[in-house]
Length: 151
Image (cartoon, rainbow, N blue to C red; front, side):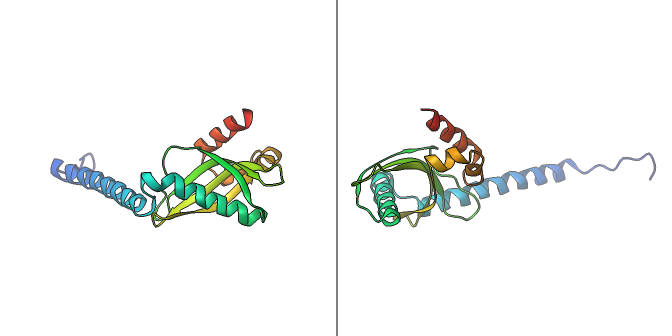
C-alpha cells in the first residue's frame, strides 16, 4: 500500500527488546560459568600460576629456575566463546648460571588446577618485531606491554 506505513504493535517491539536483553544476560552467565569452571580459586591462583610458569621455563630452557617474578598485564581473565579463559603476564625468569629471560606470556586457565602457556614472546622478540606481538595479545594488553618495555 503506497503511502501507508506498517507498524508493529508495541508489545512485539517490547518482546524483541526483552529477548535481546535476556540473550545478552545468558551469554554473560555462560561466560562467567566457564570462567568459574576453569580459573583456580583465589587462594590457589598465585601458587598454581607460579608453579606452571616455572615448569614451562624449566622445560624450555632445560635449566633449573633460580627465581621467577611476574605481573599481570590485565586484571582478570579474558574469555572468548568457549575457549579456556586467558591470562596475560609479564614474566622475569632467572635461570641458574644464565642471565635469564623476560617477556610477555599468554596462558590459559584449565580445570581450576593449572595454567598452560600458549605463547611466550621475549623482550628481544617484541623489540625486534614491534607489530608481531599484536597478533597474539589483545590491544589493551599490547598497550601494557609497551608500557613495561619503556620502564
